[in-house]
Length: 331
Image (cartoon, rainbow, N blue to C red):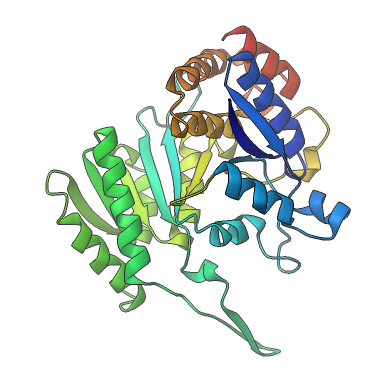
C-alpha cells in the first residue's frame, strides 16, 4: 500500500477529487490517501494557505494528487501552484496533449508533450512598484535551470521513443535571457545525437500549433511561454477539462488538473473530472502501477467515445457523479 498526499482544493476541487478517488478505488489502485487542505479552504480554517501539515505530508510521501486551488486576479495572495513548485523545487511541468478518439475536434493527429521550466522566468515573482504609475518585473533565466529542463525533455523523448524536441523562445528580442535559454538547449541537444532538435520563436510556435500541430513531438520551453502554450495545446483536443499536468522534482512530485477551481459551477454536479483523472493516471505510471493506469485509461477512452456518456462541457448530458458511475462501469 502506497500513501499519497491528497489535496481536494477549492471550488470544484472536492467534487472532482471525490470522483477520481472513487475511480481509482474501483480500479484496484493500491493507494492510501493522506488528505490535507491547501489554498482558500485551508485559509478559512487555519489562516494559512499552505499549512505545515501538508508540507510535512508531501515531504514524507513524495507524491501528491492535487485538486485546483483559487488564485485571485490582480491582487490578493500569490498563486498556490507557483509557491508549491518553488517550495519543493518541482522544476519540470509536463503536459501531454493527445487527440481523444471520438471527440469532435478540428485535428485528429495531435500528440505532443509540453515540458515547461517551472522554477524561474517571470514567474519567480520578482516584482517592484517603482511609483504609482510604474511597476517592474524581472525575468530570471539561468544556465543551470535551462540545461536541466532541456535534459529532462530529451530524456523523456528518449524514454518514450519520441523523435524530435523543439525549444520555444523569444531569443530574437530578449537576446540575453532567452538567448541563454537557447544556448543551454543547444548544448544539451549535442548529448542526444539520435534525437532531432530544433528551435522556434514563441509567436511562430503559436501559429504553427493551430495550423499544423502534428509537427510537434516534445516541446521544451520557459515558464511563461509554457503556461500559455500548454493551454493553447489543450484547446486543440477539447479544452482544459481534458488537460493533465505533472510537476516533477528530484524528491517530490505533484499531479494536478491544468484548469482552475471554477467556483461558478461548484456544488452543481457540472464539473468534468477528466483532467484530474488523467493526472492520476500519470501519477500511477510514476508510481510504476502501469496495469492500473492502463485499465483506467482504457475505461476513460471508452466512456468519452460515446456522446451520451460525456459531461456537458463535451457535448454530453452527464453530471460529475453520473460520468463517474459510467466510467466505473466500463472498467
